[in-house]
Amino acid sequence: MSAARAQGRTRVAVIGGGASCEHAVSLASAASVAAALDPMSYDVVPLTIDPHGTWLDPGGRPVGLTGAACLLRSCDVVLPVVHGPRGEDGTLAALCELAGLPYVGSGVRAGALAMDKWATKLVAEAVGVATAPGDLLTPATAAVQRWTHPVVVKPVAAGSSHGVSLVECADDLLDALDRALAIDDRVLVEDVVAGREVDVAVLGRPDGSRIVAPMPEIVVDGLFGFDDKYGGTADFRIPPSLEEAEQKALHDAAVAVYDALGCAGVARIDFFLTDDGPVLNEVNTMPGFTEQSQVPKMFAAAGLAYPELLDLLVRDAMGPRA
Image (tube, rainbow, N blue to C red; front, side):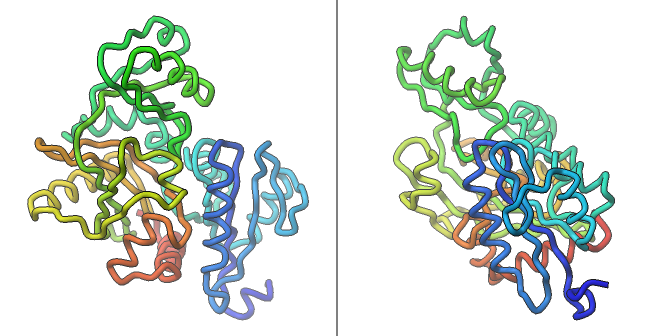
C-alpha cells in the first residue's frame, strides 16, 4: 500500500502537454489543476507528454509509454488535461479504458466526435440544433474552392483557434486554407454567423443529472482568436443580459448536444445567439482549465470554487460512470 493510500489520500495522475499545437495551453491547464487539488485529499502524480509524444515522469525524465503505464497503474484515477488531438480526441480515454483506470472527462466516442467539427455538426443537426452552413474540404477540393462571401476557415480537428481565419475578401482565401491545412488534412469553410457569442458549460453527474453553469457572453471586435482567448483582451460578461427564453434555448441546446455526443464530466459548448436562436459553433470536451479559464470562472459564478469543481470531477470519475 502506498503512503498516500495509507493516509487516506487518493492518488491521481494529472496528464499535461501533448503532441499537438495546444501543447503549451495544456501544460498551463495541467499545472494549475495539479496545484489546486487539495493535498490533504490527493496525492498528485504529474505526467507530461512532450511535443514529440514522449512521456515524461514527475521529474521530467523520459519514461516512454511503458514507464508511463506503470505510473498510471499505480494511481487510483487519471485526470487527463491534454487539449486537442492525441489527447482530448479520445486518445487518452482509450488508454485509460484499456488499462482499466477510471478517468475524468468524456470517453473515446464523445472525445473523437467532438474533436471532429464536421461530425459534431452532423450530430447537432440530427438533434435539431442549428449550425453554420459550411463545406468540408480536403487538399484536393480546397484547390478549386471559390470565394463568394465572407467565411470562417478552420481545421476540422484543432482547438484554441489555431489555424482559424476570418476571410473577408477573395484574395485572402487561399492563404487561409493553407494555414488551416498545415494543421489538419480536412478544413471547414463556414458562413459567418451574425450573433452574440455565448458559451455554455455542462457538467454531467453519474446519476444522469446535468448542471449548467452561468453563461458568459464573449464581447470581442471581430474573430474570437488565440490572442483574445489567452491574451486577456476579451470581455467575458457573466451573466450576460439574456432574456429568460434565450437562456432556456441555450441551456436546452447545450444539453441536447452534450447528450447526443455522449459527453461526460465537463464540456464547454459554444454558440452564436442569433435572432433565430442558438447556432452551435463548437464543443470542447477538455476546455482550458486554469483557474482563470472560462469554465472554472463560470462555475465559480455559481458558487463552486475551482478546487471544489476539481474535487467533484475526480470523485464522480471514481464512482459509477454515467
